[in-house]
Amino acid sequence: MAKIDLHLHTTASDGKLTPAGLVKLAKKKGLQTIAIADHDSIGGIKAAIRAGKKIGLKVIPAIEITCHWQNERVHMLGFGIDINNKFLTTSLKKFNWWREERALKIIKKLFRLGFKIHFSDLAKEAAGSIGRPHIARAVLAYPENRCRLKKKMGWREFIEKYLVEGKPAFVEKKKIGAIEAIKLIHRARGLAVWAHPSYYTPDKRKILTFLKNFRAASLDGLEVFFRSHHRQDVRFLHKLVEKFNLYETAGSDFHDPKIDELGNFKTFNYSLDRVWDFIKKF
Image 1: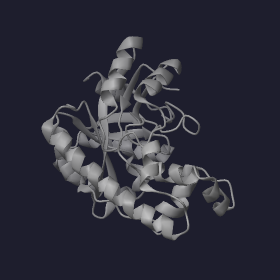
Image 2 (image 1 turned 45 degrees about the vertical axis):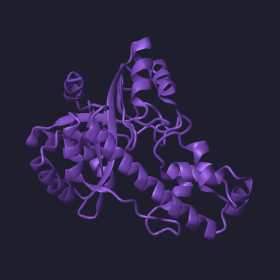
Image 3 (image 1 turned 90 degrees about the vertical axis):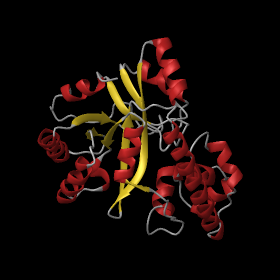
Image 4 (image 1 turned 180 degrees about the horizontal axis):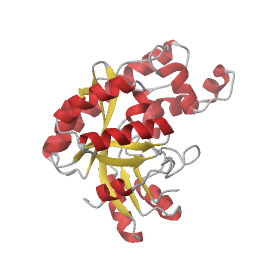
């Protein structure tokens, strides 16, 4: 396992561990440097940095912004952001309002499908920005809903069955454009990194086309090493990093200790030197 993980989620978005709990686990697992990158949220960063200082673990302030490009879903990571930046905090308030608005619409659809769920249930699940995992967990918390499903189902399975595009309770979330996300990160004095490019956009020609546009907007890097990136993905992305003179990052997208593993990404014998060079900037 690598000693770094630059893509972690806490209870400030849809992770299961508190910021302090995640830092403690990372130290226990032998990690040296982590980045807290919650969805559209900076709510866990201060607590994570405090906890990291107490036990000697480096914590980089980060964020994962949900955005889009040419009708494709894109996630943009922002590293080293100023969490007190007024433009950033104002933007995040708007994003979280969009998330609440979407959650209400999803809940109405689930209710019509016969599931027991109320918006107030989300307070038990979400300590920060509301996402589909919170809704799925809230549904599964009711025994009668589990009986209705007729089979044992985890929250990720529930999302795939009901909440993704084309499924009965799907609701599109309002998102900013990818270029706008890059500019937002830069205004907050951060570095913008395209998260898991091959996860949402497996077409290499599309990735190259998107990247040319993002690089023109001063994108800083690519998340080359990611839990679901295969050897061919890493090889392709590594070549793009070299061609466009970008930073490389590595992350597991950790959410839940019961089903995820810290530092879970494969390097396929590629060096992490570029990632460590990136970390040295913070």
